[in-house]
Image 1 (spheres, helix red, strand yellow):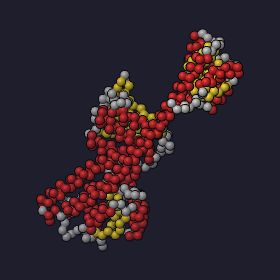
Image 2 (cartoon, helix red, strand yellow; image 1 turned 180 degrees about the vertical axis):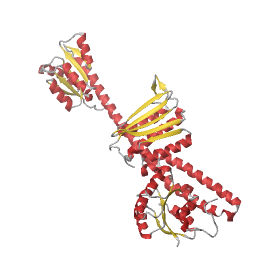
Image 3 (tube, chains in turn green, yellow; image 1 turned 135 degrees about the horizontal axis):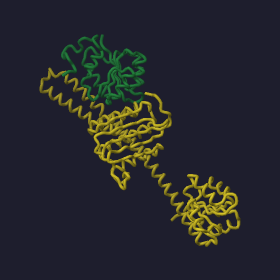
Length: 137
Length: 365
């Protein structure tokens, strides 16, 4: 069973890069994409993702509010806040609405490893073919 | 010189004959002449009309001139009105002193010399007109400065937004691509791995520089999660860039405030910290924001630096580099109906801004 990602970001470029990074893992797939919070929540209900990668600053409701609404619908689905503004304060607000992790967009390097850790041992050896320990140097 | 605006001159005397005489004397000034037969009638006029000069008889039944002058002076709105006494009795120096202590600008004794009276009234009528013009220009200037400041905030917000929306995604994409490449290091060999590593550092540096510019222009957390996180984030970045140790004490009771208040308070703190870094020589700074009364917010920034330049013991608030920032702060506060207090000595400077807020600050966020 492949892990299904919902990716939410108002930048097409960021979504495209996320797709490339995530799809490098054959066990991961993108089940939906949204460019703003409102449509992301609607899509979340429809496609039932296993994990959400969510932008913070978007037109309309921000990532925190979007996550709050998603957590109300399905609290078990991990949400990763993917932002240019990672800070301890933002992290505190993010945790309060059920976001599991805050990743800096501008240092996205360790993201894959972090997602793997979040998804836990159900996915014992993702990206098995070439890179046994992705995200680590 | 164009047609000048007429001002109101109030003449108070219980004798109609005298009022007619004053009217005849002052008519040629071309101002509005208003007659009152008693102190009470005079007060009625004062309340309803903007009066430039009050010409009044000292001896009147019921309310005499001195008592009327006292009542006028008690009212803050009337404190600048020029009061001219006319008196046939009470002509000693003590009487004159009495009149001046009550705020009179002139004390004229009877018989009145028409030219003299006219000349004196003209001076004060002109003064009033000039004061009015100045006040109007001042109001215009304030409106303009408030508009400029709002435009500047808006422009900064726009540039920060452009950086976020335009350059931010490019950096993010670069960073993610680098991540992908890094995963392939084994396949690509150590030399390429080294270059990827360097690229990664470059992207991080680029990101940091962009972030600093963007955050100084407009704090990103301000609109989204509020003033306090934005100030904490700014203080952290400032401490890192400046090596000034910053302590932040923020009362959580403040919660969210209207956007124009949040941006103003943020800018005041930003300006204060910039001054600490540029001028004070202090190694520490403390930011404290808390409600001091139910609907009043106190923003305090203090340092342990060398204090502000002083003239005659008074901190120099204009004409220096300090001055521009301080007057900007004052203007922002004036717009919000707040006040700025600066205490400065050779042991350090404390800037205290009091900002009225319309809501009662209570527990939130």
